Image (spheres, rainbow, N blue to C red):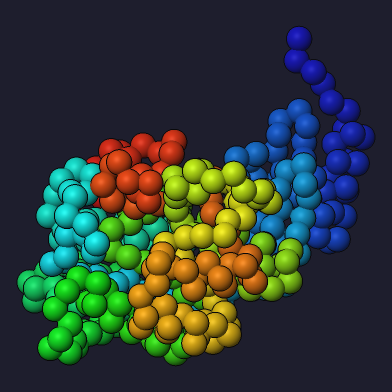
Length: 328
């Protein structure tokens, strides 16, 4: 038998919804799992970029650290197999194929980001070293018919820079120098990371929420590196928009942070790109001793290293699916 609700109940419900809209509160219909104030289904997001983050069961976090702009700096080099080793990458393709698919995945993710953060200024900067002119043209052509501004920087190498590490360090140094000219958030990306479509929007929601909680700018990774599970280390676990985030103390060179952090630790970052340490990212890890760095669970991107590398494939991710989705 169909339940008949009284007109009085419906009227009271409508009045309550109107009051909640005026006061800025949300309700959850426990029977239908709908949000009557926002007129959305349970699966919908209630978070508003730059204003509030809402998680069912945890309530609302009013955003105090709004993201105003994002510059995605991609360091490309289609001529280098792997910097410090001769092992093949997963799937065994030419290096250019990983670069092209990285760009494809970033463009898709940036499109999704603009759907969520419509007022966010999103730009790309390609910092290239030793790619062929044909490969570089293919990279830039991928942005045709897109609304993102794209800048190109060619790194001129000194004659003595004739090894893979030297070219890599020159590219890294240029990326840090350029980041000081950016407006707000910067995402440094190596050209062998495939991103899930939701990657950038999840990172931006997390950046606003977590930096608000800690009242300070932070560092964010897109990759859940397997080597971080080799050590027994305490982590703080926080809830993001659709995934969890945990504090970590190490990373490789694909990470997001702010111009403010780049300026604060500029000398340390330039030193890392100038003087080779062991591990190479030691200075970055020293920074994480002072600042918060978060890694996603599960991973939002995969690092296409050798399949047996502890710095490579993230756990619990359909790597083949992500590879095929970003076919060149």
